Length: 212
Image (cartoon, rainbow, N blue to C red; front, side, top):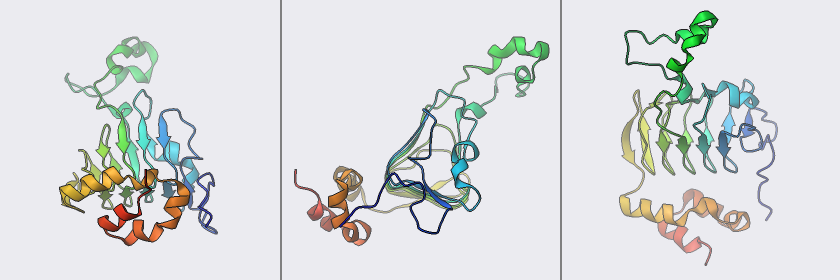
């Protein structure tokens, strides 16, 4: 069996709306794992500029392997931040002119660090992910959510602000799944066990794991 190719830009035949992100992104501030994809009927190849907003650095966006990003998912980066410690939040210096002499007032604002999406994460239609959030492995984010806080591994969240709906597995099985890390299995081995990865139990996944 021949594994799928992680370097193909459009992996689904006849569906230009689906793109693999790893071969697409060029920014050194964005890291994406193999097979993570974005689906959008309106130019999905513009992901870096249309879906990653206010990315002026140095914070990074890190997306793991095998993630599914629905149409309109947006990552708001720390460059969107404004001062809130004075009477006005307006960023006067970026307007230029003599105001530019106060540019120090809009630089070095406090941030929450990198935005990190784990492996095997499903983010629904038109979700907004705020700066510095960590979305755990195996998590699901409901359509239209605004994610302002970290999401636990294998958690399901939804709403504005997004709240934990439930966990997909109990703590013991979550620990087992994270330790198994099927997303790091060699592609040939993963290909042999696709059915177990998609529909098996944790015990069956453990039995299918490569022997070290």
